[in-house]
Length: 332
Image (cartoon, rainbow, N blue to C red; front, side, top):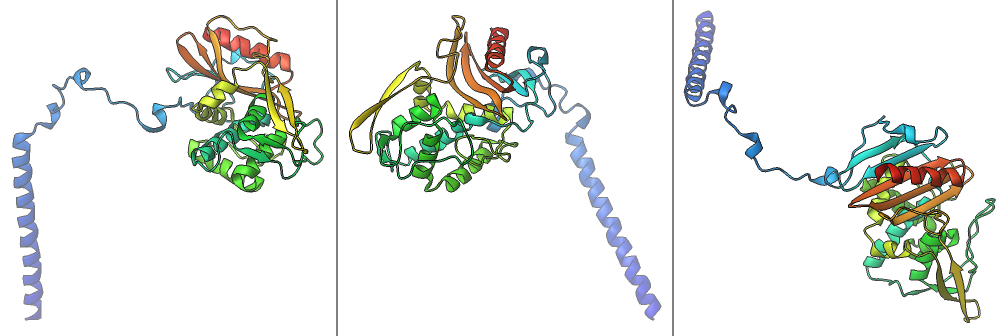
């Protein structure tokens, strides 16, 4: 009796399975009557379909595949990294060591500028807010550091701090701004690293807000392409970067009015080099340390197109600007 029960059980399972196959086959046959898969897309005119606009990262920035080397005949063998990108078409014109870790020196200050302006948008301070310096920034064993004449007790507007930071590259102004807008230099640096991630930087780590050399403070040329194209959104930077001289006021430790006259560190702006008539430098930042060597990051207009140029690790200032002119002429 037990054996008969087992046999009936298996017969029942077989019958159910058979019915499922019949139903499935019937549905497939009915489905196939209405759709011919072999020719289903044969009559579609793809050229008539509306073009879909790019979205996200690729809609704003050029993408350089890892390992890309392009137009490297323009780049001196001693130059560590260089890229040139047509921002208008997102075409990569020059690429050399685009993702190699590099020391940015004072180009770091572009990120400091971005974060200060983001904080200003929160409305707690304005460009005209006066900042009283709580301590005179020091830089350890580093020598030859570019510093302003201001010391503890002086007062200066946020606007003039930003002019001194970006145009003359005062390192003490980077510290003052970091402490004012971040609460501490260390917290501000955390903000810098988070912003770098938000922008899509992949070879980037900041240790300070000014770029004075630290072994663990680095970026890539491509990271700087992303960073300067974020910074250029601020009209104030465009204004700062057009000056060939700027005189500003501050209050000394006695509260008396004092002035400081500054000139840009960019030799394409201060008259050392001359650009062709259809080339206009929009925004820029230079950087120099013993380890970083001579560096520049800039956005330029050439004719009707906009370009980003990043050059890192040139042995001399002359080589840096000769290469910058060569790249500008190549795109022209």
